[in-house]
Length: 116
Image (cartoon, rainbow, N blue to C red; front, side):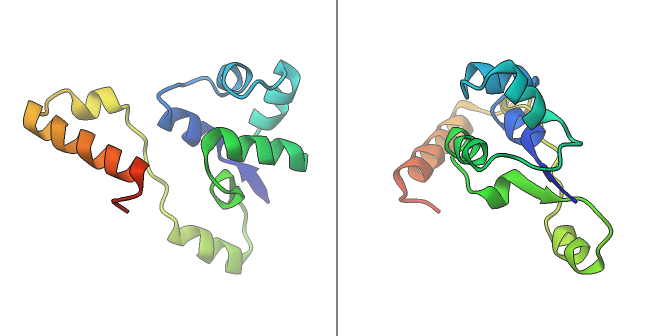
């Protein structure tokens, strides 16, 4: 079975409520946002997946994760470790100004495409 991994993507944006984020930032209706956030949903409209990819600036491989018992797919899925997302505030709070400046420059480099 496959599911949308929206919770992780929304937490990476510093938010905690998937439905509110999809309504506010993705301009989805509340009913569509609820269906997309539902972990039991078995299918999604292609146009919704496309809008999610644009919203999160990712491809469908980032949005959709495998959850199930098929040995082949489980082995592929196990290779992608689940990352526990921590807020940026808690990560950065004890860093020096010099370290924060270095991180800022790295982020700019990623955005510009000069680092990657």
